[in-house]
Amino acid sequence: MHVPFNNLFEQYQNIKDCIDNAITDVIKDSAFIGGKYKSRFEEEFAAKYDVKHCVSCANGTDAIYIVLKMLGIGVGDEVITAGLSWISTAETISQAGARPVFVDIEEDYYTIDPQKIEEKITNKTKAIIPVHLYGQPAEMEKIKKICEKNNLFLIEDCAQSHFSTYNGKYVGLFGDAATFSFYPGKNLGAYGDAGCIITNDSVLAEKMRMFANHGALTKHEHLIEGINSRLDGIQAAILLAKLPFIDEWNQARIENANYYNKCLADIPFITTPKERKNVKHTYHLYVIRAKWRDELKEFLHRNNIETAIHYPVPLPFMKAFSYLGYKESDFPILESCSKEILSLPMFPELTQIQIEYVTKVIWDFYQR
Ligand SMILES: *Cc1c(COP(=O)(O)O)cnc(C)c1O
Image (cartoon, rainbow, N blue to C red):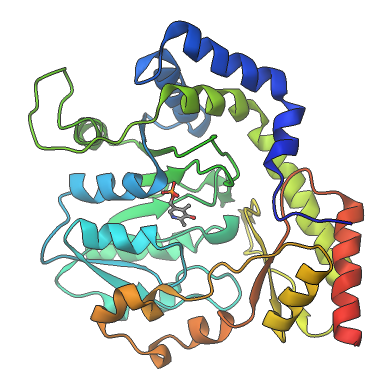
């Protein structure tokens, strides 16, 4: 049996007519850049989040950069974020001209540890970017309090957490703005790069819309220097076609996670993911902790099971950020967990038979 890490072709086959029609419509209307599908996607995504504005852009990395720039964050400023994430969360802080400040994560949940945030706040700190990693919401109540107390912007990186909830409310609605990626493998994915920002702040929304469009709201009226970061029509139409299925797909991921938890419960040397109380974790990734992780990964590969590591090198330990001068011992949880985390196959179409096969191979590994 082969168990892929994700299976986007199977998802396509299940909704082929919707996707094919969506693409054809864009071509018929020549609505390739801007146009009605892009606007309609922004409206429907905002409506589903019950938020005032959705500003689409080219990808989830630009989304963070656009928010930072339009909040006025730049040279001389510091932005606090989690030590475990995709590089976008940190590199956009530097791109804006500011300095990324990393905080260790919570051992059980892999999200930024609110207990360790305040010691990193200085008079240069302007914002905190929690990342709802793997689909698990960060500890928003505490983080929000810290932001309010210290007068900091709160920007949520929701690239891995479409429609996850915390205390019954969608993550992405807790701060000044939230950013999304629709990279193909994300829970809601386009067929190429795509991203957006949601916010209830109308002034900020207008600035971001302008900045992402060469600094213009009306053609040829460039009020500021901006960038070119657009969601193209075909991606917008594909996202519109997929949006009605997201709840069902997230539910299927949750059921797969529950089945994994049940199957893997008795295997020694591995730990299944823990969920924070009062959240809906949408399992963009199903991440276990495993002893002899690298050997297990290799064994699974030899048995046709594809796995991944998110992420093998935590951000403060990356060469790219060596200029910040961090030591591994500054981040004890990152240091230990990065050697043990392993992402097992996870996607809505994954079957119980496949999960049982993964379980069997993991058992075989530890019984050798
Ligand atoms: C995927 C991802 C991004 C960036 O999204 P792109 O669309 O690939 O630019 C940012 N942050 C996190 C946590 C991500 O997983």
